[in-house]
Length: 257
Image 1 (tube, rainbow, N blue to C red):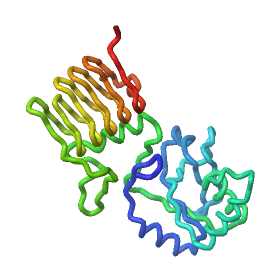
Image 2: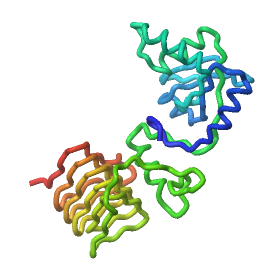
Image 3: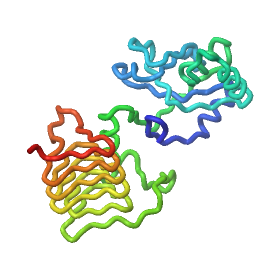
Image 4: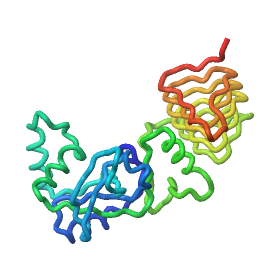
């Protein structure tokens, strides 16, 4: 996971590309649907994959080659560019807005490396929820448990999760420290999430420390850290035409009186 993206990449191929072109900077790119290109910094390249233009999140993109935000710099070029940018009072000190355009304007050797593996944008609520749900199932495209390229959690040490006598879990990821006394289906529970007796969690993401109390029902939702869904509340909907329901961190959702 990097920034707003989830991906799995073997950097050796990208490094070989950087060396082959004797590049000053290599930017990993991936084609995206044209209707989504305005959400990304996009690159224009020539027949040799040399970058000729970089456009940061334009409402009218001229390319659908999205920057993945993964860069390989030649060390001396990076150090020099950062030092010069650091003393520029008009700079936002951003790679996409400042560093890359500066190097392009100076005719440095910038090349694109097209990546065709697993990469998902998770920069919106809908894409974050969709990608989370795609981690589930018997054969997910992105396998968290693959031994060839393991994914390491940064969660602190917590006790094992606990499934109560009347609890049930189906096709879900349940992290350490969770306590489940209700029913969880096709969902992801982060560390220390709590599901009360008789509660239902369906197609949802529960972030660390959140609490869903007894008899509550959560469907197609993202529940923020340490948020509370109070007893008997119904939150979210199975209607896929409607937006994913979201509760912010530390908020409490109560029943209407």
